[in-house]
Length: 214
Ligand code: CTP
Image (tube, rainbow, N blue to C red; front, side, top):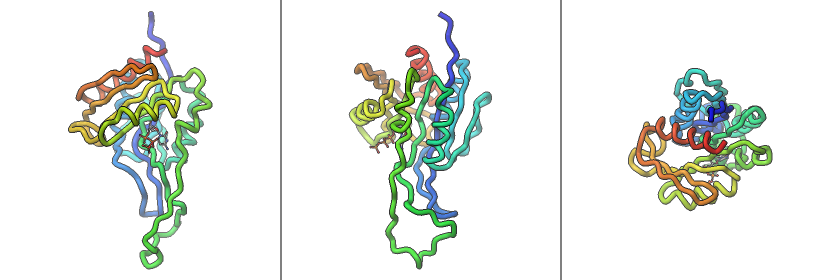
């Protein structure tokens, strides 16, 4: 059977939640896994839109890139691009919280009391779940130790076709590395363990699992 080209929408990298013009909350994500997925999907003949948080990586050739900074900006870019997508891979490490207020001028320590009030960011996957239709949704779960139970919970809560569970404390896995070692978990209980290998090899495997779901 001939392979059908699909339209992939992928998020990658961290989000950055500003407190004032010089300070922000963020996380250790570098975008490497999401960019590897974008590269692997283009190489496999698919169309790719990559929504990237603040990262220092070059876009893979042939990828349409949309740069965002905050979780709210990432959500609106996803909502805008989802109608045209067949596949959504939520690889970004979206900040769950943002400062409750933004100061347009640099805050002075004399004016601060040592407490930072935060508000919850929306969960992007949960927000767009009603628009899933026939689309394939894939999520990631970065955990510190024993990722499977938490990943399974997230897969079911977010209505995913599969989730990539990642123990970021394992040597060679997680943020900023060029390698990773993950388990793919499926709603029917199937599991596929991908031993330590390059993020590109992991990405190729994820893209080929998605092609087989179609
Ligand atoms: N995610 C999302 N929107 C958020 C947070 C996470 O879409 N605001 C997506 C991530 O891109 C990932 C999946 O949800 O595909 C799981 O993210 P993770 O940070 O591991 O889990 P959380 O849902 O934030 O749960 P918890 O804080 O309990 O670990």
